[in-house]
Length: 342
Image (cartoon, rainbow, N blue to C red):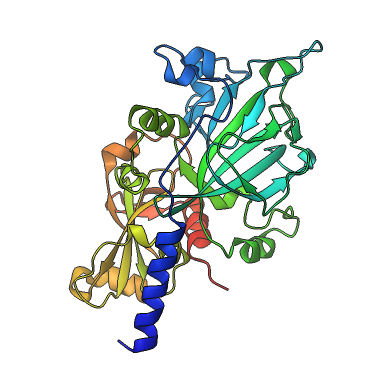
C-alpha cells in the first residue's frame, strides 16, 4: 500500500473518531407514554382505521398491506380552538439537514430532517406534519438535544388530509440510502419536488418506538451493535463496483477473506441494509456469476420465516417456477436507488 493511501486511511480514522458521538437521546415531544407499561393507546395516534397499531411502524395499515415508515405520536396540548400546541424537540445533538415549509409539496406536510452521528453511524431523524417550524431555524444550523425545532400539527398534501382531532407528530429514524439520489430522481420523475436527497424515497430506517424503548432501558446502548441485531430477511449479491452505501457505512462491512468479486448485502424485510459481506470468487456460484456479469443483482439467501411476517411492500418474491427468488418491481427500484452512481 502506498504512503499516500496509508496517510489517507489514518486521517480518515482520526476524522471518524473526532466526529463520532455516543448517543444521548430524548423523546421528540413531551408525550412519554411509550415508556410506561400499557401506555401504547396514550402514545400512538391511530389513523381513521381506529386501531392503535395503525400509528406504529411497519405493515400496520389497510389490514397489514400498507407500510408505515415511522410512528405517529399523539398530541398532549391544544389551544382554545383545539389546535395542537405541543413543542417538537430535537431528539439529539446534530444539525439541520433539510426543512420543507410548503406542506402542499409532500405527504409529510411541513417537515424537518436532522443529521446526527451516533457511535460513528450517520443517521437522520425526521419530524413531519408540523404546524410551524421554529423561528430562525435554517438548514445547516446546529441543534442541541431537547431544542424546540417546531410545533406539532396536521399538515399534509394527501387528498383525505389529517383532521385536527388526529393531529400528531410523525417521527422517523432514518438512513440516507444514496447521496446521489438528487441526481437520480429527477431523471425518473420530471415533477420531482425540490427536496434534494431528503425525499422520503431516499430515507429508510428502523422502528423508532422499539429503539427508543431499548435506549430507555439501557442508556449505554451502542447504535452499531443495535443495528447489527436487526433481523435479516434476505441478502442481495452485487458486483464489486463502487457502492455509495459502503462509503457511508463502513461499520457494516465484514472482514474479507481475499479480493472481493462481489458484495452480499443483508437486508431487513423492508430493505434496510444491515451487513455487507465481501465475497471472493469461490463463494459465488456459476449462475450467480453469470447474472452479476450482466450487471444484474442476485437474490442470494432468503429467511422465509422472516418474510412471512412481512405483509406489505414486498421487495422479493418466488419466481414463476417456484424454485427460486426474484426482485419485485418495488425491489428493483429500491436497489437502483441504493446502487446508483452518476
